[in-house]
Length: 141
Image (cartoon, rainbow, N blue to C red):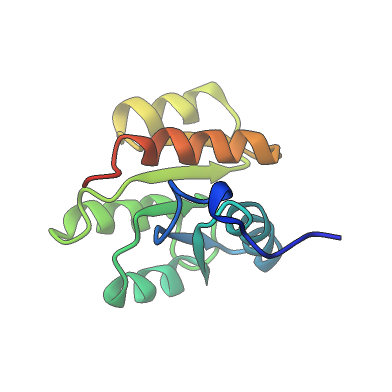
């Protein structure tokens, strides 16, 4: 059974940090939630790019987990709009996608300048390591 109660020792770095997960598969949002909430993060899910953009109108997350391949508004368009918004332009973004080609990763990390890039399928430790790496230098931001 998964214990949903977090002890203070488990969450000092994550306390009060909100992660917006923009993903077109609700099951993936649930998976992110299970992994990240156990470490004390507050996870907000948005099903699809448009719902993600709508959520960003009223929320300023500490981190955005962003799928690229979504049917309504794709992840690169969401990313472009995030970077064009003065309130959100510095928000860290981790791309989480099934696009595993090395060229996609190069485009994401070096051209678009996303903060990290995780390919599906991924393990819980890989996700947590990426989140900790990206948010680790932003505790005071």
